Length: 191
Length: 399
Image 1 (cartoon, each protein chain N blue to C red):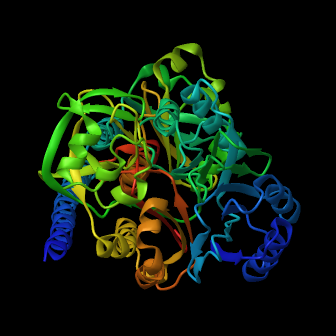
Image 2 (cartoon, each protein chain N blue to C red):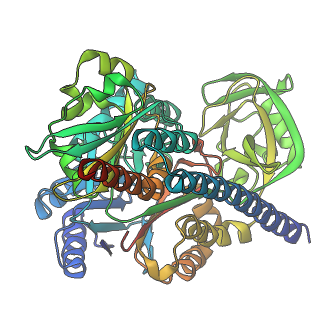
């Protein structure tokens, strides 16, 4: 009888933990959905592209907790150049893809716990390395005009695989923002 | 990703290793990218490593001795306390790195060094792995976890099991592809091409008996509520270590169903516990454990049964599947850690543990070690070393 009671208690305890975890997951999913909606609202509002990016990055910052972020576009010479950034210092950086960025450009995201161990980051000025310790790299599109979203934090080992999964979920928004910006640019040039 | 297991009970290290290697190669159809192996200390770990490294040149190897053998989906691999089993993983689109070393007098710092070496070995310097698997010899597991978290932060899952022997005599061993150690740590970091999920549980419930550790040193509780710990524990349990009091005896087998718990965290107001297994009464009527303990810790007497220890393994596997949102047909295989103390307690019914795992995972290949300490990531994300725990790492078939 006592043994059965212990067994039941263990099963009940486990069921309670499962329910509590399910509730946490539901709350997490709800926050994610709300952020997705906020991002979509930004995309459908008519506005100038740099402002649109800034607002979108603000939405992403709420969900990913990064400190800074920028979007890199591949140039004809193979280098990567920022098209939008949350800080002016990051806008002036230039990037030569090596192992990590080459892999991201093939569509595989990468979470870096210490940017000083990464060749592409080692090439950046000391002022950048002073403000960035960890980074999330998310491919936005592949091909000749490949693009990467990079989110950064000054704390080492800040980003984990949950951040990476979330960033992948939201990368479609950023890709669409990029397309919208490029379309706007083309329209300006035509007219 | 493809996973297969193999085993042997042959009497010599060489013949057992070769038999298992040949069978693994046949089942995998390829050289594994990474090999996990567990063996009873009847076999010689150093010789075993040489054979494995020779048979699978270029393969990452992580292995540890295990109490009385191991288990796979084919059953318990233990003939008169002798057995060897291995799991090979092929994942050409993934990356894996294994490194090892001694812990010496600075286990935290050395663990940090070894995890960086394993990441380098995977060819992914600076990148956060999906999972870190550790095989340590008993004694420094808390500091090992701290060292790894110093490098990777607290949110990387760390799962593993401490090396074991058959008689708690200190005969345990660990190996990597490069070396063999009697004291140290081997780490494998995973950057798989598929999703990996995990779970870390115990099958015990709290009782109303609890007290404060008022004197402790290392892994010995000297006093609970200012009274000799062994006497307090004996009262709480209705006398299960009565015969050991005053004799400095081993009490490992007596205490398996009544470990001491400490609250790690809560989810929705429901606490979850890390466990400590009393193994010996000391000269001053203290209790020595297989975990570190500190003054100020509140300890709670926990209670388990044979049934919970048996059925828990399958539930841990199911929990890992749920965490990864897998059905059994979605997985390639699994790595299981099952406390040696639990194994010795359920001994004659250990086949039922294998059955519960096979039921949960639909007989997918798995390797299970019987360990003298378990490390894992609790429900709230805390990485801890504990006793009498069960863990499961499951690998998806594709991402």
